[in-house]
Image (cartoon, rainbow, N blue to C red; front, side, top):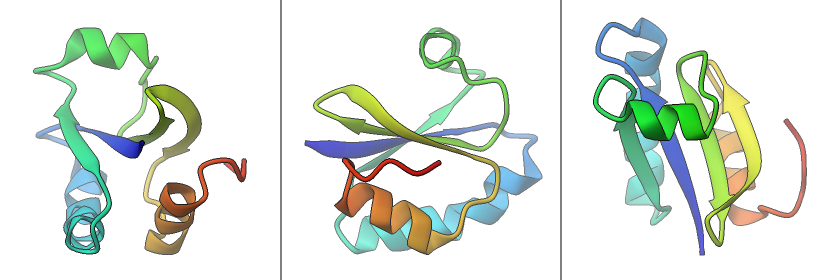
Length: 88
C-alpha cells in the first residue's frame, strides 16, 4: 500500500498553502495522513523531519520518496502513483 505522511505545523504558512493540494489528492483517492509535528514529535523524529512542509511517501510502511517545501501537485500525484520511480 502506498500513502503519504504530510508533516505540517500550525504556524507554517507554506503548509497552509499546500492544504488545498492535499484535499484535492484525497478527493482523487490517494491516501494522505496529515501529521502536526507539535502533536507527533516522535513520528517527526523517526522520519527526521526538520523542515515544513514535508511529504514522506511510504510503500508498505517504508520510505521511498520525500518532498520538502511547496511541491507541485503533479509531483506528489506521480510519486503516489509510481512509488518505485525515485526522484526527489
